[in-house]
Image 1 (cartoon, each protein chain N blue to C red):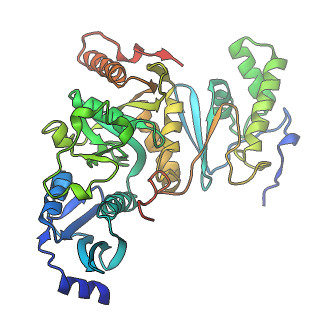
Image 2 (image 1 turned 135 degrees about the horizontal axis):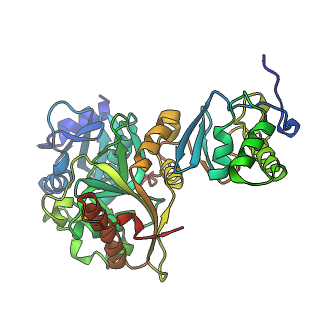
Image 3 (image 1 turned 90 degrees about the horizontal axis):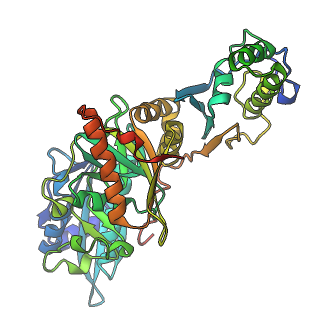
Length: 132
Length: 311
């Protein structure tokens, strides 16, 4: 069984990747994520989405930060801090392989931009029965 | 069949039986003992007329009880409602059919939204209850748009197209003034079945107004703000997906596939928030969007996507 560790232990030398159960759809640079069996959706802004899409489990977070730093022309230290903050937030929300979520299991966690709780109740939008 | 229903059928003349109606994945027949009620039901459900066997048979009739009529509603052999006032089980009938349509159509991605169409493209209005979905759809159909639904948008998971569910529009009392011209005509003798909502058949707004299958092009989430401004603000497609999922009846059931379908819908759509205070102004804004988009599609150069400001 893979080791599961807290998001707070994530460092720049780690190689992390999304859980296999996460589905990602990218629209205009923003990502919408769904975790199989969970009721919520997560929306990532374009920066968080860029980080998310580059979590390949092959490169370290420092390597990713270095690439993004060169790409954006922003100091490495600044980008490294943003990458670690974002990746720890991903971990906090149960989106990363081998990283334990710290939030309640069935509640969507705030990631970077937005979340939505999706109820499993098929009929919740319908009005109450007139005489029920 | 329960003994009670058998007894009922032997004592009540259920001489009026509808054709089979099919709405999305649900088919049903309604039997009743009142010609006026049969006429009224036919006016509300004619757009669903179909053929073949029905999944459910509703029975609506009156029996004498202590010298007064009591109105009974059955679905198959199960009593669903009974009341001295016929409007109550009638409202329950509409509610039960609506609920059954949702329950029987789970292979589609179902969104709590109204929708209209124009020029072969659909406009979806996902929103919570009391947000003005029905009022907006009614206003737009009155202005020449085709009608898809006032409550449940069904998206075909294979194509991403919208399958119409053109039930009679349920107009709440709060919108009667702005939609005064749509007050429905009820067949003589059926007035007693009318409750607190108008049931407006789409054909009574405009004959031939029911849309066929279409693909979505606009996702517009309305909110009714009395006394506020009426404005349209463009939002991102990711937010559009979030709004569709939040208002889905069955997103959790479709899971990752549902996300892919909603993303597919959003990618070919433009997404907006619409704050509505004035219905005519709201309809005009929406009409302007669509006209611009259609001109754009036909190569006339207008850009419907730039009508609203980016939020």
